[in-house]
Image (cartoon, rainbow, N blue to C red):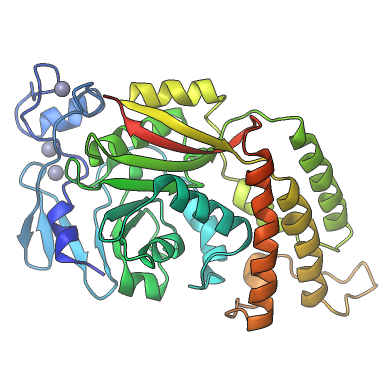
Length: 376
Ligand SMILES: [Zn+2]
Ligand SMILES: [Zn+2]
Ligand SMILES: [Zn+2]
């Protein structure tokens, strides 16, 4: 949907206002100042200039600085604020994700997706009536989850594969996280899950700088991503994954989806210190961090559930190895909403998966939940 409050908050993704401090005020005339000097101005320690407000024109919004017209897609439920200029390589993620999204339902997240969603809710603590922005919202499942608590949720993603219910119930923007199309301090809180690992280092820094500007000085940002390091517990996870891969080779488990999902990982964040440094350069500081050692998840979700899924998908797998079974995600039947028994089982398993955070959340490893705040 497109609420009046969303239209109050949007701005041109690529245009910065002329005014700023002595360092980030426009030096070149007109749109030249945006084009030539965007990154330096946007990352100014003062918080950078605001973004240029758009003027309604017909069915769209026109930027008075660059002159671009951005469509307001009322039927589809989103505003298209994708930069018309090149802002860096576009990931394949959208295409890959598309297959998964075909199977997405608007049911509440379960299993590890729920563990992450609950960590978001606990650490970010969005309040009823507060506006919260999902950076890289995908189909909009998590934005819907956040909105269930009376929070005013908005989502932004570069790919337009939104769930129909998300398009009806949360505010949606099509856009690039490296050029957030929002006015300064537009959202008191924001979150970003499973996104930063898909960007190169410049992209990660861009996203952090943009998020920083979209927050007020009292704002907060929750992220879930991973650094390229691992704890000793991760050895157990790797052993389980090796087993799963072998079972996959034997046709007993569908390993392809996970491989597809990860195939686009760039993994620019080398260590937690590296991430802290990227945050600092964007004017943010990590105030709380919990690690995600996936011990229970590896066994329950990556192994047992895959085996179960595969056994249901192909109850009478052909013995003849020469018979090829379809292995692509889009060949699998479309996901139906889960039944009541299945949902109860999934909820019970979710509680087991939560032990990974409860028991091992303090043990340093790559995947982590972070709460970030603007630096004083
Ligand atoms: Zn400045
Ligand atoms: Zn401009
Ligand atoms: Zn513009």
